[in-house]
Image (cartoon, rainbow, N blue to C red; front, side):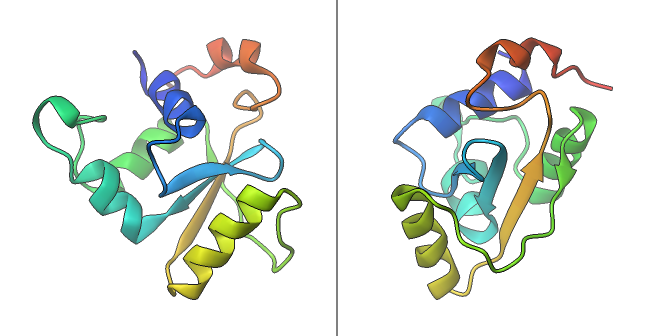
Length: 117
């Protein structure tokens, strides 16, 4: 699977707590510190991505057309998103938000348009 497909599967999975859909499925929210441990720290057959550093992961996001979104203090409308964001905020974690118009939970058919630049 290519990077966007792996990312999509992670977001749709219940196995990862450090990454989730935000903004009603339009953005990817990442709890940076937790993500480093939970995803990038995996080894062997449990490894999800080839990279182990956050900088490399963000570079992949950029290669596939994701842009960083500055987040205001408005909270997500859905309860699971709200709870995830509150838990991350209470832990003083850094939450990163990334957006790609072709990466939208409501429109999985657009995933094929996420091409590496």
